[in-house]
Length: 218
Image (cartoon, rainbow, N blue to C red; front, side):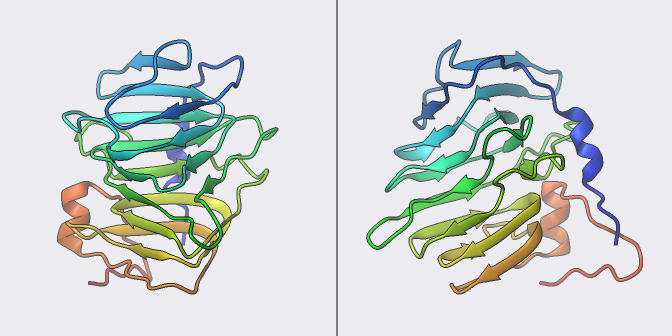
């Protein structure tokens, strides 16, 4: 089965020259120069230079239009007790392989966080249907081990092609029910509900492999 998502990497642009990182609280986009804003014809792009830490509770953006958050040379980190929802948002991780680029949840007893993902839906947006995209070129510290307090509710594509992901928490689908994970390996000891339906994936614009062996379950 071919990798039908690798070609999306041609849409990644880079804006950073230093990597201090930033904490993003729902409802407030961190100001320049902590975040570099680029306006594209189909979406707004926010470039985070270094680690992006999501903190607090609520919707990260207003969801009225497509947003792509490009994390350059950094990780996507969920702060302790964070409860983050996205609407029409894609996270894109890229860099030069000198810094970790994993997705991290708080670990250990009593530590919890949740991340609810819903991807861009604009018909002409190249990131349509993509909730998380990790540059195929990234191989340095891309693996993740999420503890029992990690909750991931994901619609759309979560593309971590070189990562070995272990989940001890609760990954699940949202509504309209289209979760697709692309990973090097996946191990779960939690409660897993990663269903998808043909209609749900069509509504979100999640690209599917139509060749031999293709299968939609629901």
